[in-house]
Length: 225
Image (cartoon, rainbow, N blue to C red):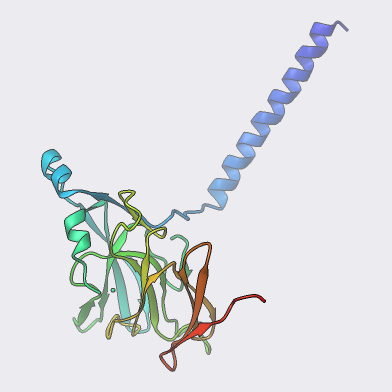
């Protein structure tokens, strides 16, 4: 067999492996789809929005049910910087319980009797969420926990988890929303009603433990000798 024939066989074999690998990945992605997009919303300055006649486009989608409340999310394709800077004190997959979209800016909690509660008065970027669950004897959290982004702190024209975040807590139906801590890097649920909050900087992180059941925020000394 000549060198050229051997080379052609090797190339044909490699090409066959590539085709098989490609279709294997495609089949896997269809059988096990993932949608773990980073939570973010594009920010446009008021001048740019006026010059290009851009306006935020909002959409509503059903998220799921918490006890007797049906939860809907409001998403947006962009926010005008003036509007985002005026926000008052507030999948990925990021969180526990219900999973929000990557551009969620509000939540609506609705009961069958017509009662409803809107979480925020104006659009507020929600970067992370953990919702209460009651379908089991023990739940990681008995209230809803949110991390929200109120301003483009790193000036990259995108609101996302890289910006400084505020941690808030509400009842399962969105009522009694209150701020727990500002200027954070997010939170983690580490036990029943235990929320670990990271503040400080990447080089010098500072940790706090928030107990949902007692509403107590405690700093954790993580310095090494």
